[in-house]
Length: 157
Image: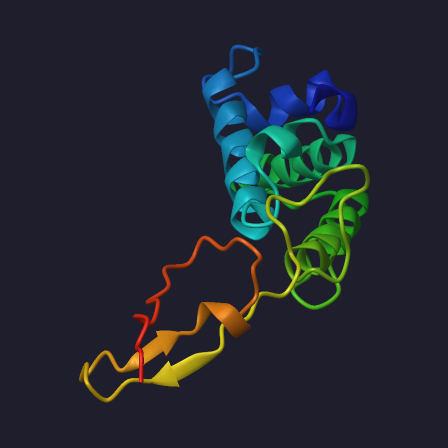
């Protein structure tokens, strides 16, 4: 944050007790807020360990942290910072939004899980009301899934 806003900028936006020192609790709050918002958006697609290794995510987190720090007391955010923040977080064309929807992927970071489509062919078994839907494994995908499946019993006609 000091490289983005300068040490004087971080002091100006975080110093609550007017001692000309960085208030680390305020800075940590801004960093935590940015981290949580990034996790909220892309945490389902990537693990936290993977996100921590991404230079791009670190840069986005820095921009978001600086914006939150600037907004903390109702101060206006510098225009150049606000333009970059909007480019990252816009809810329709923002980079973070595009990554969260799967339209873009983070470079050199593998996805959390296999994203190939998985299907389950089902049959209705009237003997087991109301849980009548059952998966037929022989004609379903053999890809692993984290979802629970209700497997049909082997019925011999």
